[in-house]
Image (tube, rainbow, N blue to C red; front, side, top):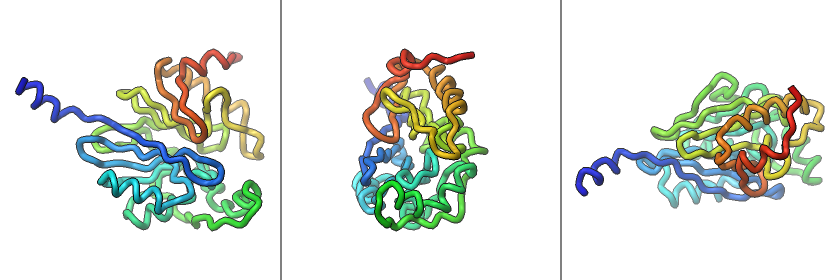
Length: 223
């Protein structure tokens, strides 16, 4: 039994928790490695205080804030968390233009004035990054343009989990009717995601989880 116990101490495990935040009910994910307690926030929606309370309650050492894309409802708390914990913001530079017009977009969607963060600097450009480390665990950065030019999904192979942002939801895909959206590109991105193992759990930016297997049956890809 002793040997087994010693080996267990080397076993790392990635855990996550979802916080549904803001008026658009965005899924914000707190992801951490059990052994080192190092963690990141994916899509820091709306409420920096609520997120920080959860980080502190779990005694997580935050190492970064990651946005799957540049829409305001996925990044309202990004700057707060960066300042509170002195950590870098990760987002694709291809979505930087969305950060500069967050006020207008937020007003359009919520029909009210919203304080949006003034994110002038991208600390880590996801368009140049293949992997993000969470302690000793890693998330593969899969580039999935379509919903926005810089959309990404984050995949942990060991746990079989995909954080899909607004690219793939349960029973539907991300919208592409914005001027900068592309239906062709999102289908290319979905095709890429459908190559993941069918049992992969998909954790989207809104709504409930699904699996690659469940979603696969809905898409017919023209080659």
